[in-house]
Amino acid sequence: MDHARTKALIDSAWDDSIVPALCDYIRIPNKSPLFDPDWAEHGHMDAAVELMERWCREQSIAGMQVEVVRLDGRTPLLFVEIEGQGDECVLLYGHLDKQPEFVGWEDGLSPWTPIMRDGKLYGRGGADDGYAIFGSLTAIRALQDQGIPHARCVIIIEACEESGSFDLPHYIDLLEDRIGHPSLVVCLDAECGNYDQFWCTTSLRGNLTGTLRAAVLEEGVHSGGASGIVPSSFRVIRALLSRVEDEDSGQIMLPALHADIPGARIDQARAAAATLRDTVPGKFAWAGQTCPIDTDPTQLLLNNTWRPSLCVTGAAGLPELTSAGNTLRPYTELKLSLRLPPTTDPQQAAAALKDALESDAPYQAEVEFVLEQTISGWDAPPLQDWLTRSMREASLEFFKADAMYMGTGGSIPFMAMLGERFPGVQFLVTGVLGPKSNAHGPNEFLHVETGKKVTACVARVIADHFSRDPSAAA
Image 1 (tube, rainbow, N blue to C red):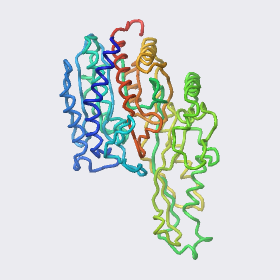
Image 2: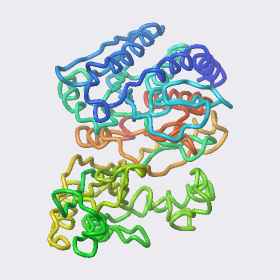
Image 3: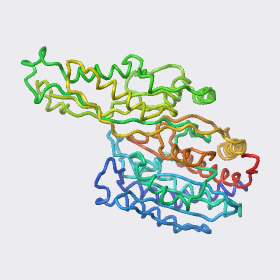
Image 4: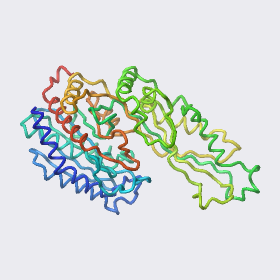
């Protein structure tokens, strides 16, 4: 590979084609079905798919077929197949659905208005992870530009990832014969610890979400007449949460939600912490003098990737402050999101959580936990020598620094699904979501230079995948 030529082609493609296309994509409010149940009627998902399909068809890539696959009642899927050499297959994955707007965007920024500032493209969905189809095809184009052979490549861009990928298994079943059995999976939906190196994600946490409701009355009553007699539903629900989480340390109290941390993952966390140091907590916009849960960056990384944690992500039964009269409210309802270690069984965790929350409620209050979704975590299989070497050399060439490895605190349902379907497959899970890029929150941005370098690294890995000795890797 002529690395200078690869870099020149990829940089030009990003500047002249990818960034303008991403700007158009950011303008489309194609929220995931969980956040827009009427997505089909609104048409935003179709608009995003059509934009990407059109861009794909404009690329000069030999042996490419582009198709939008549709199943009744399900979000569409963009399926791209590129002929290659040999009998093997590389599967590249991304998604085009987005999280909702959220609040707190800085002046001059908004979720649906693309803004380029200091080399960062702001707007919802560019980094998470609308760039995936553009980066994937450009990596393959860079190989073909130099006549570098590659395996047959299949690109899947789904439209349901932010809702748990509940549509995706139906498409994988439908397309199973066309996909074949990939020997390498490339996912561009992950994080990077900094913008200075090529990062490989080694694990993903699972997720468990549901609503907890505690009711004490059929209707609200005057707090002066009821307090001291009727227990507060907020206090009831607070006591229930204390069964699950230690409010002083944040430690999850239920053994079924924990898992043993492999020694190799602890070593990788130490290495990542030694590189990132204060930037582990420093990437967040802390309020006032708020400090992190621990002072040891290794423990913070392990907390974030291999230990369970609880977030309350929504509430009902609580009026806005301007409407909060002196009333003892009849109920409190909370949306709970528990991140689970990669190897924890989410169904067993859900059963343990439901039992802990619903059993023997304080004051015999009416308590119910309604499970909404469980997502399995994922722990990558051991990397073969060729892939470790390829990622390191790609990082040294395009980032001028060694490759790094760490787990990720979020979930990508497709990875666990693929690991079960295709035992022995190798995974390159990477991305551009670095410090302060803030996917799901305000001021999400895509670090464009990192996008270019990640694209180049993916090209190098796909090339090395073809040239490796498959028998030595088996």
